[in-house]
Image (cartoon, helix red, strand yellow):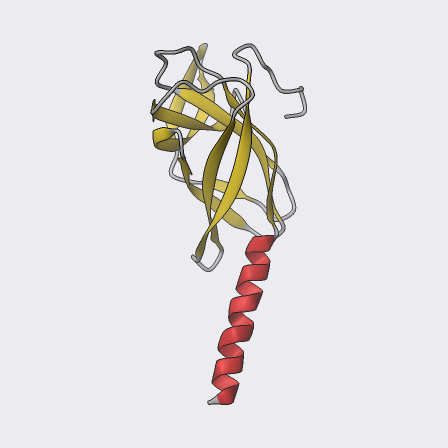
Amino acid sequence: MKRQLFALIAGSLLSSAAFAQVSVSEPWVRATVPAQKVTGAFMRVHSALPARLVGVQADVAGRAELHEMAMDGQTMRMRRVEAIELPAGKPVNLASGGYHVMLFDLKRQVKEGENVAITLTVQDAGGKKQDVKVTAPVRPLTYSAHSGH
């Protein structure tokens, strides 16, 4: 009985340690004008182990989705994606022109200088999900992250 309990506790700790290795850097949200109901959130996500980003929520939005922008001939198209792969040891940029987060049905104007609470749902290779909390500062409407982001 004690061995089973120990194995269960050890397994839980190892699983938590794996998720502790998912980190987010350079998060930001684009500011909005008063009546605007949609904006984007951008960041760099890094996972030490293979994982997938499978969901997102934000306190200011009625709905948040993972999206991808891609060229279709001469036309830039945006579409919702169910998941974004997080390869082990390789940062994944969620940025304009590629994968990013869309925040829909905004509950209020998002103003420069504020912070937005975002929750990313990450799934490990075994299918276990865990939330990663992010605080993203709001940047001006004209803000553009540096070319490496």
